[in-house]
Image 1 (tube, helix red, strand yellow):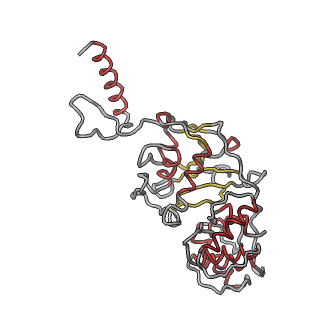
Image 2 (tube, one colour; image 1 turned 60 degrees about the vertical axis):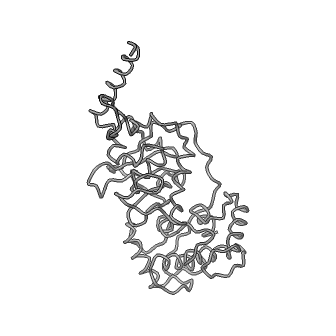
Image 3 (tube, rainbow, N blue to C red; image 1 turned 135 degrees about the vertical axis):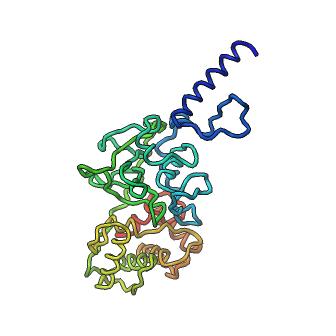
Length: 334
């Protein structure tokens, strides 16, 4: 072997051994030759191709419907079909294109080759808010999408959470003084590639006891679809009030019996062609409020698909026939 080859090999082995000592390499395959160190994981976010902010958000949205039209279930041990762990940090690793099945929450926050701390005021689409404190059941990470309004009092985020799996909802994590959630930016994110914000889709209505109408009927269908049996009559009475409070308690929301932005975001489900059930009835009810003339039968067939696409086109939304968070927000309360 030539001197240059021996030198190169020695340098590679030395660097690999240094990384192995730091705990950054995977297990060496059995087929590796004696004296060779083989990295079965990449060493940092910087070792991966740069990813745009738009791509991070696009990947995040795929898990909302990846499970036969529903969200990917949450699990700290299971791995989804794309090779990533089905917990919050595995989900984030998928969106950033990190190694499979993904680093844990503590490493995402603490490894400066993966992320760097930023300020809350500096948050951009695709950045992270991480709680790396506490136990294995309390640590969490969410993906920042955008501020809900100019007050910066809440924001839209993607997350992988227990019970619900992949969700897209408004949050306030990290905005209060003393919060354990801190903002971070991935090293391999393309900082200049900020996606164009989607068109305005209105605001979520606030429903309280005593309210009546289409939005109440829609909320009742969504509650029933979550397993809370009640009559769908379009009247926000005592039974609906009690069911809203029960849902809020189970979802970890403020229990006030009021259906506001956070409760709407937790209630809605993404539905599309082939879906069935009360969430479809809710979508059909709202589409009819916009003049679609559908039969509210809970079956997302070609007529509902066509009505959805027509509504999306009229609102300047992505025309994909799927009633997801953005389409829901445009439908409800308008």
